[in-house]
Image 1 (cartoon, rainbow, N blue to C red):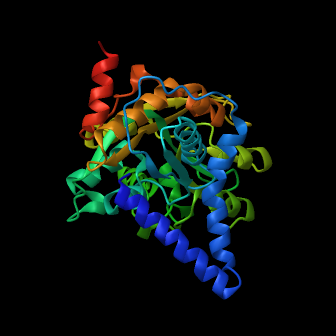
Image 2: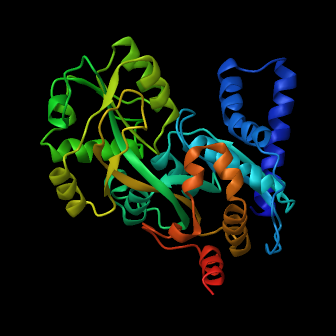
Length: 353
């Protein structure tokens, strides 16, 4: 966001370009990663012809903005691409790019280290980071600030129909994917397994996989079930349910109440039968909230502008993913688990007048 950071970024890109010229080529893995990280921004730009509304924004130096999202099969990725499209189209000097990542825990570390400017994360994981709990025990990230909350993220436990898994308790001895290592998904998986008296040691196999990898391995029979924390419908789960016989594993209402009592950032919800193919009845689940976070070092004007541009251009967010339509000023502070950035606070103070 600062001139110093922008200059460092430009110099880094120049050095990288020179090294590529000298070597006469690039690494295939690097090419793949670069393409994935750029895709969300490109797709969002291609899918929206809307004129970006930027009236009432504050003067800013602009600068490079990396938006840390999640796996390419999740919801964060397209929404991050849409947000980058909004920032790039505001003509305020921002150059924004959506970055595919391992989601919440990694994203908070990226913000803490200054390797990303905005991140999409779960509200529970943000709380853990700021307070030094769970994955952040002994490692408080005190410079994390909130911008707004977005929509509920449902903890979806997807099991193949021939797995024999009808409840969480049935996962004992089964092959289960629990999300990327250190992700918010993994935190939720551990807490829900604990609710039923299970640990990783009770599972037949415990794999750390992304949304897309989990879907592929359920199809191939390598795993029996997977935890996916995302808005419904999740593209990875929708595709899986279309081509393979799977079902949502419920969390009983009394168990949900027990979980919420211990971890108050969860909410109890029922998934509509129409969300996924062959789902006949509503399913009892729990959910957390997604949110946007930034560093406390971000300029107030930039935090203000991001909030204003987001809420003035919600049509662009809605175009990118169905859950973009759930983002609303009316619920923008629901479940806010950490301190707001002063720039965001200024924005919300103004819109409440």
